[in-house]
Length: 219
Image: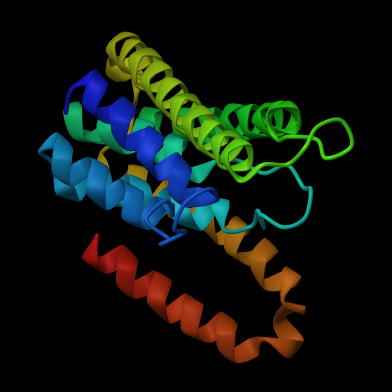
């Protein structure tokens, strides 16, 4: 997948997050699958998406809370991991994706502040249907452009990071995946606590533990 292709995919998935449809294609699990498939290595892209999905489950996109953007971050990580095979690029891509997700979250907050100026103010102007529709379409366009720019810049920078640091990664593929799964267990514990803790969600914990063990064997 070219840099332009990754940017367009990131822009489209950014729209799916909130502005349009909300078909859950922007979730890291689906975004990683799509990015890996379009990049020519479905397994590497999907693996990056699975890891990021677990890590980002602890952030609930509710209310006015600031949270990492999983869609653009996953496209960056999955496209990088699929383009550069091996455990080192996978680790660097996922780590970079986690950081880039925070930057994507800040860009969402900035866009929401900008949307306040885009939406017609009924106190200062007459609300005609054409003007309301124009403001809505402009907000959608800005969200797409934001997602595309965040994704394209992230893929470009991640490619540079992998090119410079790939040879310094000391672990093989099984150890790399195991390291990420250990970190993911911490995120899963935080998520469980948000649902009431082990005493109230014992069955959920055991099902998740069994699923994680099975997933680790399959990966």
